[in-house]
Image 1 (tube, rainbow, N blue to C red):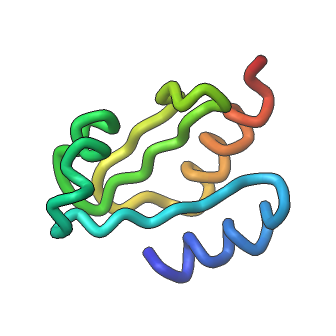
Image 2: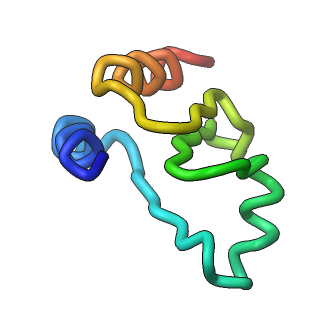
Image 3: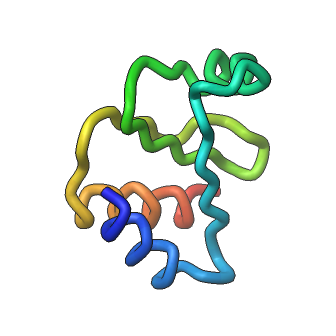
Length: 76
């Protein structure tokens, strides 16, 4: 998944903030609950007010994640 995410990061540089969360760190437990973490890899797209706009588990195609990002950018 790293090449796919790196490609998206480069494509959306300056427009979208990408974050990676280490699920093994206990301090991240509240964030895992907030994002409804159920397994990895998990891709969560949030809006400006931290609301979940999209959440996908397992390996994803570039086009699927790109569509999710585009939909989030178009959301009011």
